[in-house]
Image (tube, rainbow, N blue to C red; front, side, top):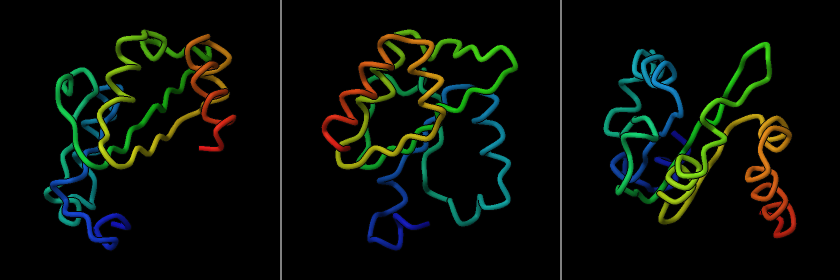
Length: 115
């Protein structure tokens, strides 16, 4: 809603999830009327596409602390390279950095650049 209040059209916003279960839960949201026009999809279905604003969920929760396919470089590349103007990421980045050298490098670079 904040982005729409800032002047972005719903068609300029895409919400990406890394797991289909998250996608289906978001589609059932009681806010779906308000979110109408915003595209929701899974990262694997968004290759070759882009949008002005991307919101992405890197949320991964399990007792083992495993990050699943969030350690696969091509999926990370697709997820992080779809935004034209703004990229908002939600997730446990400490866990991602702990379990993946690539994520550790990404997070260190963002911290160095104060992004």
